[in-house]
Length: 631
Image (cartoon, rainbow, N blue to C red; front, side, top):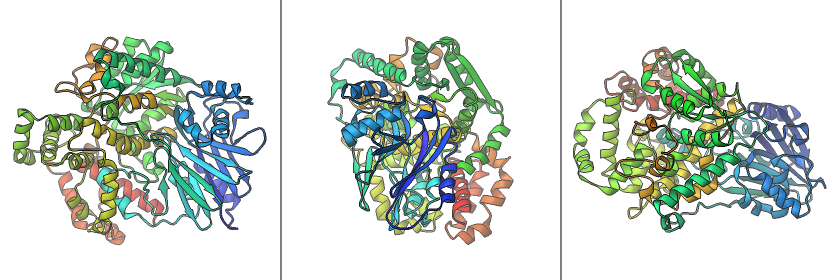
């Protein structure tokens, strides 16, 4: 796990040594162990290393082949590198290091872009071919590892983080498509970035840069068989058996490291499964969880302790006070470059920060919900498609739910919020419902917030939405929504959150659920194996029921949330008044409708706050970005 950057120059324009040093320095948290800046012909490669496999200096990057023709910089891990190395040795290649980076380099030399199909891991890497004067860049199947890029008449630029890319001569004109989608989703999807000139490399794509030409191509398509493949031909018991075997091997591969390793343990099913499997291969596994000392509603450490005791792990609990979270808020805002407003990033940052004091690599349970239907929206979608008298009654009572007070910060208020969202969604088509349930704002509210600016780019916004809702069919199944979640939620929310916050603390996080073999297998399973009227993530829960503590079952899913509403009404009230609700500054920006901002403040202190805290948090993150990068 590292950070990479670089450029291909198309002109005589020179980037100064001082700027290159700033570029390398900006990647320090991603790679604190070694930084390098290497120029070859018209191409410069930058690497910041977090040493995980073969921590010796011989594995510092860039790594060259024996002829000196090829050079690679690499961010990520190739978990099956040892078997790839054996195959390449059989073909006559020899190696100077024990690193996966050198294996990846020779795999590319031998197979070119076809090597990508052989890789099991997460990655973004660049290989420069000195003889052909050609740069190749690629990322992994699901975009776990980020890569931003831009180009102009003077060159092509790339970097692991936006803040690094902005060290190059990048135009900072806002992209109103991205801004609009950000305030709807609380993150920016697809290949868009907050700036028009900058793009993100979509999942499973590669780039060739040669002769001032830039060629982008998709190399991976998630196999999606509409439930007509292997898993559908197996009995439910056989499905479980195969899932257990795949996850066990995915965990085994992800325990390979030359540095201390542990696992996140929330007490939920997914992280508990990871710990159950990892503890088989690694006795006395280190496990880590966080809880809330001042807010019992959000605290789930009792379940994490149950799992830790059950598997006899070396468990550490970080109990957070309100002050700990508040102090970390500015840390997160300072590190954030592109606006990203999933507030649970605050917790991932703190969990990563404290975990890093003990280990350098941590396993996580990320991906289980998106692949196996673990969210409330998945249960709502299942009910919408399967009907029944309960769904009809909830739908008919929409006027009631609309009048009841709603909030994420309490049991009844959160239930009323969920019932209203479900009843509203029942009146929409599956594709429209999917998008609405991903959003915090509908189109009318978005236009109110942004003074009608989205109307000018509405056609393009709709095209972006359709790239995700195209998977969701009226005559399809819930698996359609899960397929859309892989492209939208995993790639643009979950991966961004975990990558940025773990890398801020120089911690590598590995998610066995996202082994491509597990992902592809998940989409051969029928919906009935994943969810029914009584159970979400059915096959996960049933497969590991014999090894997990029984107390984990039949308990509500709370998610990884922070008490934002409470903060905004108390500790952060003055901050909001001075920095976010400052009407003079908002007028100067000429972005937001002042009347809408006032309505947010009014709703915040009402008895019906609903999701207002998420909207205010999105505004806080955006305003912090604006003051840092635009003013």
